[in-house]
Image 1 (cartoon, helix red, strand yellow):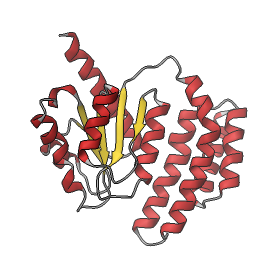
Image 2 (cartoon, helix red, strand yellow):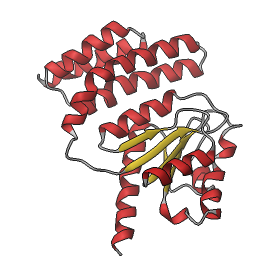
Image 3 (cartoon, helix red, strand yellow):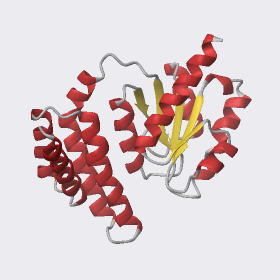
Length: 225
């Protein structure tokens, strides 16, 4: 597939996602596989970008929650088509183990789900706690899995107030140096995340992958010294 045809296919994927057309999203995912496109790029530049537009429409009240959920369902159906090829294309990678979830009191997991897909596509082993996850649950699961990174998201300003408890609870348990902490979500900004003890912040799914990789480099570098 030449560059122009690939760009047109990616734009079609964005459009299908924005218009929550599940059948078209799935068909385009199959076409991308048949044409040999990088599944990671298809998700990043196509479905993920489409969901970002959906999120913008939701924030401006152009879309309501049902439209957002339909778009998410369409994207999830398409990624099921791409998932085996993601695993195959990144089978040799071993980036690290991440425990991810939406912080307690918050049930909005659309952004978290996109980040999860992108992290797995990049070669991370990701355990998803879902939404409304208590801080202690993040730590318990990280201990159980010998994880490298604890990643939490929030959409509400009221629930992001629980995020500082991750670093403080890890410190109380003598585990703070054992894990890297990543924070994200609509109300979270980088400066605040760093102030409350995070090691990294991702504004979107693409940045989250880059940050996770940098944190793993830093963690492994520390282990070598």
